[in-house]
Length: 231
Image (tube, rainbow, N blue to C red; front, side):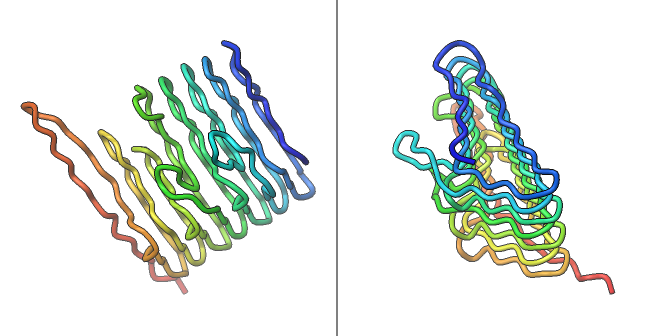
């Protein structure tokens, strides 16, 4: 499949993108849902086997494998599910954002490995956030690999204040992971039988509170642990 684009420049919401391969794999160039004055469409991909993006769409000089951007409405949810394969979206950035609504959630679930691409904050590889100066609400990023590994070491993951959770059977390897806002979200990494390597970047949640005209910023670096496998 080539580029899928439901972006609109009107006051109408952009359309959803749904791709289903109940007996095979999904390979798509890139996907964009965008509405400057309303809700951005959701992106849903479900496959029996692998899900892969192969290219990117340039928006404001950056290449996006999947982008769902909204102005007045909610950002679109991005949901990728591979029942018996892997997810590889390393061809570009994965991002959902809003200015005045609720940012979309990002949920990847695979039987095998999950691999993301390159990008550093403020243009991270994977992001769910409120645009600078916006009044919206952030959302969550969740990756689950039931029989494989999670590798985000090429670029940062940033939930802009939402919760981040990675769960894998095997290794989890990350670069920076951030959830920084007025109320920073939680960051949880769990490997059931592998190792967790976050040495390539910081794992940080930041909460900023203002009292008596003074601003206090508290930064918490999440401690990651690997549970002992059950015989």
